Structure formats: structure tokens, C-alpha cells
Length: 96
Image (cartoon, rainbow, N blue to C red; front, side, top):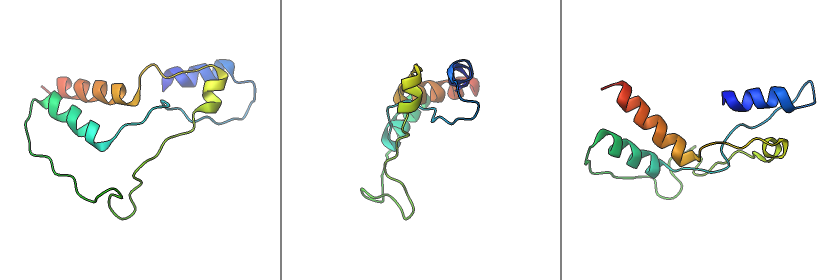
């Protein structure tokens, strides 16, 4: 995030602008749970509910449009899955 903000500050020409800062990839609840389970070295029984729609008000799939920032020349260093895995592991390691 900080890298993107600095990049925008140094490279965007307009005085007032907006950008979606994100990886162009996505992740899933399943992937996040699997990363948590692996980092914590647990073997729980996992049950997903809600079907393909999730719960009322849930947004089952969302992805930011990062094309504008990409056209400016910035790319995320990690995919969504890599960022989640790193964050989970860092939080786990800090709390041991």
C-alpha cells in the first residue's frame, strides 16, 4: 500500500486523482481458512454454509479495477493469495 501511494505521488500528473490500490488477483474464504489452519498447525473440521450465494448481504465475489494504476506503471508485488499467506504467518509468528 505504501509503495503504491509513493508511486502515485511521484508519477501521477493530476493534482486531484483516485486509484484503486490492490492486486489484480482475488482470493477466497476457503484459501484464507486453509492458510490459517496451516500456520496454526491445526486439523479442524471445516464446514462452509450459505451455498454459492453466501449469507444475505454477502458479496460472493469482488475485485477492484486496478487498470488505471497499472497503466500508470505500478504492479502489486504479491498476489492476493501470497499477501494473505504472508499476513497470516506474520501474525501467527508475532503471537507465539
